[in-house]
Amino acid sequence: MLLEAIERLLPMEKGTTPSRFLFAMLRMAIILNASHICKDRLEKRIGIQLELSTLDSMLIINHSYSEETLYDTDCMERIVQHFLTFNQESFRVISSTPVSPSSNPLMTAATLIDDYLAEVASDLNLKPAKFKSLTEALPENSRSLHDGLYRAVDIYLKAHPWLLESEKEQLCQIISCQKLSLNACTHAAENERLPLRTIIRVLFFQQLNLRTAMERSLHLEGSDNIITNSHASLPTHDTQVDPGLHEEWETGVHENQFLKVDMDNVKSRVAKLEQECAYLKQKIQKIGKWRCSLGFLSRKIVRRLNPQATKLQLSAIESENLNQMQPVEQAPVEQSNHRRSFSIF
Image (cartoon, rainbow, N blue to C red; front, top):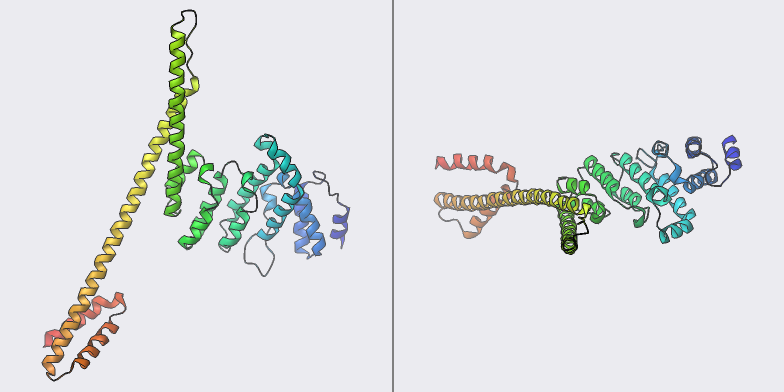
């Protein structure tokens, strides 16, 4: 096949072949059903320079009949594994020396993967286990902030509202609340799609960060007052005030206001849940009382019609009435029918 011959001529070195061209060849290899060796070599070439790729080229349509997803997420997961395997030594060197996020290939690839997850999250056929495996494909130190990961999880929960509460909690466990920005924390605290436990965890870490910032600002203010007083005693020196102190204090007050609003929202949601539980308890108690009154009336009618009825017959009639009352939705209709029959006597 001509495609396989062209693939064998491509160099394996990083940066020698554009990633867009490699993704185009991989799409052609999947459509033409090329050999497994050819597709695996193309995936390795892409994985070597994954941080040089773009989001539109990473979206590979799924052509497999065994998978119902829109995009080929298995292929992307294999590419990420090749990326980690090839760049393992360079990651160790980067982790030992401070490097900016823009020049860190691991963080650049993590940003691309977060954008990729946000695009594929709206696929209705994407299973929660597959989505979670994609989010966990990169190590934890690859993301300095989890805002992109939180955005992808939020889109997935919005597109899959039928998920169980346990499945939502498992997906939200991959998000580190300590790595969320202030805007992301504020959005998460008001997000009704998140589980209540996750919202409480976000509010807890937000309050903890706020307390730490306020303590640090108070400490800086105390040290600044000492320096100001010492300089005030010397007429030849000018007093100097820390310019970042007031900004940090205003930021702490602003975050405290956001935290109060979030706590009020959580309290209102908990109050609504308590009201719903109380309403359900009242309904259950009414149904129980109504069943007891129905059994009493049925026994009384049987005794009037047949004074010689035994206790065994009465208990059988009562159990038959209870079995008829199992569907709760038909309770008002059956109650009205019994009342009509009782009015005859």
